[in-house]
Image 1 (cartoon, rainbow, N blue to C red):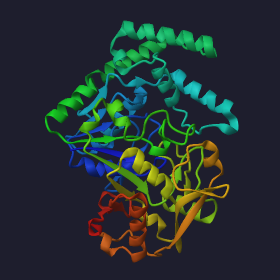
Image 2: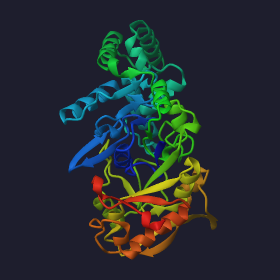
Image 3: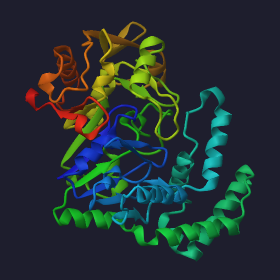
Image 4: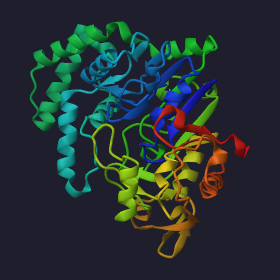
Length: 421
């Protein structure tokens, strides 16, 4: 079975721990898009692991971990992440990196920061890690790929062309020789991990192996289907698996969406259910809502059923996994957004115009909170009745079943809702 796990909101839904949980029964885990701007957090026996590029399933010994062609990576960051895992007793021998993945260069970081400064109040809210410019160079057919790090003459030619271009267009000046030597050194250190990832994945499928495909960010940050321009620079929705990993759509068996019991967003952009004040602060504090990559405080709001329905449609979700239910434990009332209102008109579906996003107001359905500690629950039937009703209502809104939910950050705090079936 080949499973895709995607975020069904604006990212940070808890995909890392879900992937860690599912990877136990899989043979390989593939990261198919994004860069080191992603942050997947997994807590095992009280020990916190934060992944930026390496698939979090690598925590399970013997699993094949693949960084596919749809990823853009900074070699120094990848090597750093590998070394940190080694020092903590996690083997990286089964890690493979696509020769066709693109490299984030120093000028990409500089350009991204400069663009954000120019945008001023209209900034996107990027991480400043050069992800967008790296993807832009990829599309403009001037990108440097991981495989190029193994071919001195090819690399030299590409570096020379790019440095001339960036100097002419933006006035950027870098030492060509220094940059070339750094890249070649990265190539030497990564050589044994570099491979044709699409062929590797194909061979695993032919052997009947079970593969888990993990993305970064969330559906609403997809470059084509998200709240553009406040999005990431790649296809974070399930469709990105095919191009980002080099597999056909018929290879996918199941698509699982991950959602929080409320909604968060990092960076700029529209957020209809955003809460400011006491409740928003409580969600942020109880949920430890700070970016795993940047440490930025996340914007918090009520659960948004409109974007859930959209994510179900865009990804073809077969099921949902609900995280951080326990964060709502202290609330007297909880709300779910079931529609938007724009200039008196009720909007049930995802708006396709930025002006609607910017000005629409959420229409809420209010439900009783449970005011009880759910973190000690050992199964669905031991949840307070209002918490059960909350889960059921989210299922009804999305028209897709919730098979797992979490009441805490540990592996064992992910529980089944099989009693719903």
